[in-house]
Length: 354
Image (tube, rainbow, N blue to C red; front, side):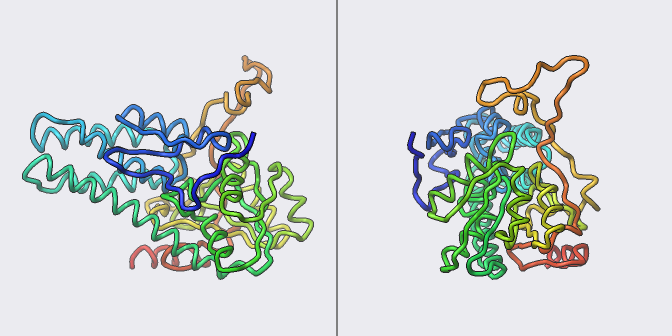
């Protein structure tokens, strides 16, 4: 089956009198746009990873509140505000690790709490704020791409884990945005794509994005990363992040920590690209980052086929969706306001106070 292509400037999500997303659970075999019509479908899309990636989740949640607000047609501003608060609580419960979700919901709730003379005025203000969240994300990703591309040598081999591209954002990408910007500037790069078990976001999504953008890429099993690094063919690693603590510890897709350890062993820079909305200054270190534990079925089966023994009293399955990479393993943090280097506690505090 041929891999379906998408426009080079595909939109992960868009508003057109309603919220539309690319259903990422169908890629790479099918490119389908679906509409999320109510709170239940929006929450389900986030939980099931139809929409995923920290920035994209934040954007989807913001527009999700607009969908919910549009369905309240009786009562005044107070009734509408109460429905928005209810919807925000439900969306906040969908995924615990990606802080962009809570950041976006907080921005939307701040708008809802302001004074409006009518429900329609409040709805218009909410939609305007959701558009700003989306536009801010796009601008941040493009700025990160431009800054981070300076760290990429011409001819570089780059290894990445999970998917931190356009599909994880409003359309340009964080880690893949850096790779994309380097490629667009004329640098010759080739990308080593970790498959990223158990849900294969690298194989299904990152490889699809590289193919769509025309960027040379090699897909391999996660356990092959050490071989690629040992060969000398990789000059840098770059990933995205779902939450970054005040000291620079990084939560990202499970397996990121192992890649960072390998990079340190082989003397390869390990970079993280993330917008400031991914930083959580309320957490002193990564020890306090909540780690989502997902269904055991994601590990024990593959596309409906069982690949592990049945769980019983003596056999269980662990499926943490994220791990935490200590700040000392991170060579630099690429943000829209500049490239941060150790000591991260000071650098993060300074950039967040600007």
